[in-house]
Length: 512
Image (cartoon, rainbow, N blue to C red; front, side, top):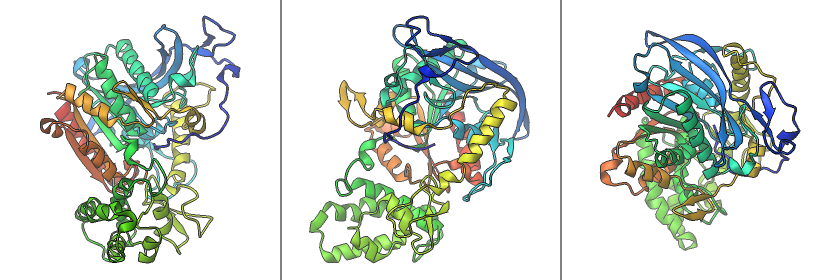
């Protein structure tokens, strides 16, 4: 769901001190010190879904698979829910998609119950969803007619837990996380005899970080994928905001089109264009043209040029010229979310700037919370817990962790090993380039919401345009843009368009 890369100082719960539940047994060795090991088990149910007039019979499997280290010791148990179509003559040719959200510290509830699972929870569009009871309805936007689906919960989320000799270091970091998902997929392919199926990865937010690294990891371990779907991408930490406000110009340039789109949506532009896409193309050119050249001059920019740039920023964002001059032409996302509706007692969302909220501090520099997050979290949490225990018949007294940012974030290592070197921040665009070069049939689809401040679409374009791909492989990357936010599926017209684009993508990538 979200891109969260800061460690939060809360105490980690000690799983070793928790009581054993049904199906759990102590680890075979060093049982006194080791964590419980949950046996692999699954619960199978059968259902139907009608998509585009066709009635599908499908099997739902909710279960867990063990992750082992190089010594074949269990170090973790990862939870998943899989959906496989029943009426398939040749399952070896049936595409198989592994889906996951991000965080780090988020389960895959959001993609599962909001986008592509066989059922979805109804939420209000661009406003807060009222409390329970929530409506869980058949999902006519599901991808189940194109592919079997496996939703995976990252370690520390859902029912995925450390086990045996496992430690946070085994899972909570860029490289460790990628390896754990790779081991899960290898195990799933073997248990379910799906080695010869066309394979796809679909990640959202930090899930795109995982997917870009994972497709390379899988290929290095003999598993070539057909396609990767990157929704709301976060690929290169070095082009975001890694340092003090004046240390790097590029992030201001890459966030500008999202600010312009948001001002357009809320009717705050002095001269609102009719066509959003055409307008944003103009903003892109300004961002990497006159704006970039102005910021590069720093304090040497003349007063006349400064005034001209401030006026153009006002035209593109609706922010007051005086404010833009006072902040040296550099608008951070948080400041924009607070300033756009200054005087109206409202702030815009971060994950989806179409959402508005009331903020406690009228004169603050940035919002005190994200209204788009608060608007839907309760609905997804309640709906999935009900669905899991009733429709999927997965009975347990264990707590399903929709998110656990404090614990996972506390231990997360943002670094990465790349080309034999240690890097303090991650850049998985290089992993994606490596996978595409070595597998020239690999297709990539980049899905982007115009109103997403967590992972702005122009930053994604910049990352993918700077991978150093040969010209012959650039055509393997295609894009989709939607009038929605980080969670594209919260706006049903956007979800419908997204599904149409993905159906086309699967048709092009599943069989070469």
